[in-house]
Amino acid sequence: MRYQLVADAYEKIEGTTKRLEMTDLLVDLLKKTPKELIDKIVYLTQGKLYPDFMGVEIGVAEKLAVRAVAKATGRGEKEILDDLKKTGDLGETAQKFLEKRLQALLFYKPLTVEVVYQTLDKMAKASGPGSMDQKINLLTGLLTNATPKEAKYIIRTVTGKLRLGIADMTVLDALAIAYGGGKEARAELERAYNISSDLGKVARVLVESGLEGIRKFKVSLGEPIRPMLAERLSSPEEILEKLGGKCIAEYKYDGERIQAHKDGSRVILFSRRLENITGQYPDAVELIRNHLKPEKAIIEAECVAVDPDTGEMRPFQELMHRRRKYGIKEAIEEYPVSLFAFDVLYVDGKDLTLEPYPIRHEFLEKIVEEGDRFKIAHYLITDNPEELERFFQEAIENGCEGLVCKAVSEDSIYQAGARGWLWIKYKRDYKSEMTDTVDLVVVGAFHGRGKRAGTYGALLLAAYNKENDTFETVCKCGSGFTDEDLKKIPEMMKPHEIAHRHPRVNSALEADVWFEPKVVIEVIGAEITLSPTHTCAMDRIRKGSGLAIRFPRFTGNYRLDKAPEDATTVDEILEMYKGQLKSIEAS
Ligand code: AMP
Image 1 (tube, rainbow, N blue to C red):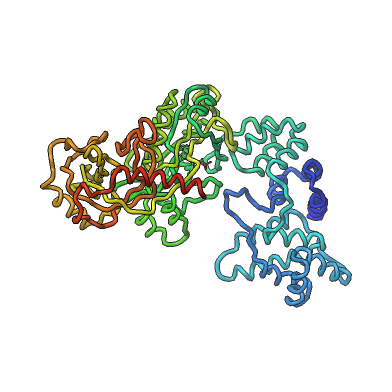
Image 2: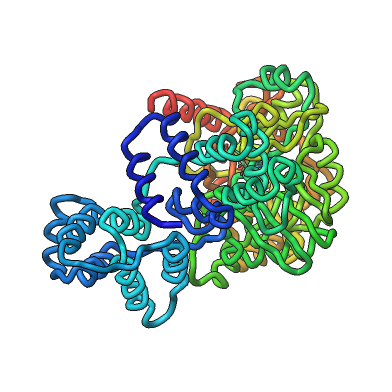
């Protein structure tokens, strides 16, 4: 197939802004394409050589392309650059200079799509020393044989500026019309695309085996499934109503979505945008290998930064330190992650995407072997709005963004690539910030595990209630302690240890060790939130809820100068919470 046909089609497509016209032009091009080239034409029209998840980019810097244009046209680089300043488009500049050259050129070898594709592929895969020169030479070779119009589109393709505006859905429409018997075939093609993320493959299967082949399309290991997305509502009542009165509510972890494909010992991780991020998370790969029982499986999980010492979740920003190409080993130690699995799409040859969620969830529970760093997303099945609200507050307090409430009906399939009402997220409309430290009383402690075995994993901290002369709990704090602190604190607290909760301590949590309220320490948190677990200011803002400090961290200051009655009071915490709300309203 002559590449000129493609260039002509591109030119026409560029000339219209109407989607229907664009689709018709694409239909023409696809019909002219021989079967064996259909996938390549599909990729090329979107400026690619492969589906995105393969991560192959032609990636020629404009500077390099300028050199190739200069070489192919026999002009100086400066001349090309001067013209580029005027046009702002190297494709156009190349076209212009090639037109001038053509008058003198008698022979050239017409370019075929095969040659263009193979050459671009070689350019994309060139690496190591000398690869720059190799890319320039390959590109020069193409340009030498190109017509001016072809040169324009080749240059735009290699520099990543083709931008014909052909969206995935336009390609699917065009394929349906050209080879699927009409637009009605689009839904089936779309499903095939959603479970493979590969438009070229969809085109190839359609052309080779028709809609029959498309219907047999199955989830495949190594090909990412386009993610299902959630709608959003802002009250438990609305959510339950929309989900038919009952749902499975899950913590909405604040991390990075990961789709893990396990094939024996081989594991691939895809991001939400379907990039291959396996190299970034060797620790997550190991978790998948060790905690997923089946030989072959595809699951979805949220990857969350955790405190290496306590296993507590850390804010999303800490995970961002893991977005790097180098120093991964160090980053793994400094910013370890946990996985929370929330769906399973494939197990040992069985495609589960069309199964209702309760069945998928059952599978998930069967195939996951939970451990400290690999868990199934914490969930609650409920039909009660108050219960849902409490679960929401608990999720926030524990470092999550809120909840994802999921349908449990017969039709609750995995809607690949779609944002629908089978998943509804429940988040806060605001995000507040705690700027001041607070001084809190140590009233209890929890035994540590792992690295913290033998000392405390976290302290139970309370604020002072002046009116009742009691201490009301406001957080469990396990972060910010140095090794020295961890050694010192048990010794320091020993004299204050008592067998039961102190009568002046008001706590809904059962600590492992109780203390007389004596010692005050300084703590900073991310914010103050409503809490179903802590007693601080219980019922004062909302019935059944207290207040808690989210992501609490010991500052290193022991307030030995303070008596427990000098600690931050419940009223002060209440004022801080109200202050947060005001500053959100004001902003
Ligand atoms: P959003 O990005 O705000 O639209 O929320 C959807 C995202 O929440 C998903 O893409 C996941 O990354 C994340 N998430 C966290 N926990 C869950 C869960 N239990 N179920 C589904 N998605 C979750």
